[in-house]
Image 1 (cartoon, rainbow, N blue to C red):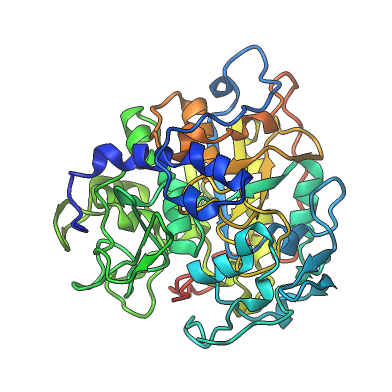
Image 2: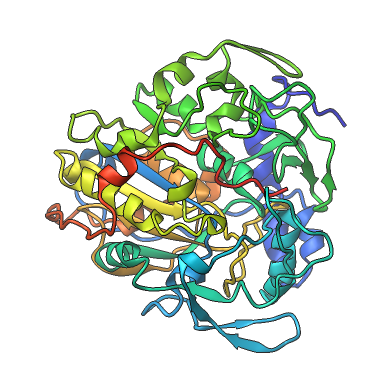
Length: 484
């Protein structure tokens, strides 16, 4: 098989992700998951949710969409016991027993290995009872072969410590059926958040993480990225992590002349091996490179990279007051603000609350939709079997809060969402072209809104740490998720 990153695979990037779903759904209903993973039939579209959309298209009401991307939490780790949600206070273990979920403080946390193989162990063919069989990690993110994490994944976060999240969920829409596109870690999750796929050729998708930092087109020569095939078998020696095969939402936004920005920490040198910061567009040759020659030569910086990347994510705390909020934004936190368990930092809820306050207090509130979500499950228990729509997933459920003056009030949405749902919403709001990846099959999050209502007045969110805490902090320049 060829792993070169050229233009030959581009026309199949969206189609391949769609081909395997119809038989996958039928086979799962019959209990035949592996057969489903190698199916190539055309799927039927998912039933679309109903929405109170108002008299005009969504783009009349929403002019700005902000995605705040946190790290490594399952839905139940954040919202176990939430009224009206699918979130029981007990979990199943691999020996068939049931265990009560227990509260956990940020200060007590440790990391859990949560790469592809650990996700499949936890998923256990849909039984959702293998979380105690996930592996432990050691310093630097390495997964300990042969280890088992035990009962640690069966915890939920102390309510007082995540008060801003609970406030936002109470006031707006909490989605209890948001499933990442692909089993595994942040590398592929962040690709799915901008592209809805990681498929680089027929029957092969990127999986887990590249072999070296930085994780993109500026990686050292010889860096490789694992691939997973339709039988869910991983090939370790995959391609250099610089993609030309699939489009991203940046293509659609640029073509539609819609402004966008990626709020992220960029280290002084993109070649700092041990302190790279995660930027999804670093993997996209068209954005990152002025020119790209396969297999690994990225020359210069692309126009979008120069124009649309920030040097610090804290800029999101001041841009709204300055009258400078683009059409679409992604906000990627510093490691200490990311909810990443190994840091034992409790700053994530305040970071998110302060961003929402910055937008809520600005002139942009009446025309903005904010989506807070966590990129992968982080190894923590969740009871909801993810629907298997193709050979990479869906993956284990994550929390998602949808915030807007037009968001329904205090509602739990049970609509089946995935990361393509967010892309589809952007396409609807800004009337831009579909990527024809998972955005085609996904339910839009538009049913979380009621555009027949007047925009609600913003009520500030109480936070433990003020914006100055983040603005005045020294950046870590470390990737939030580096399991391997």
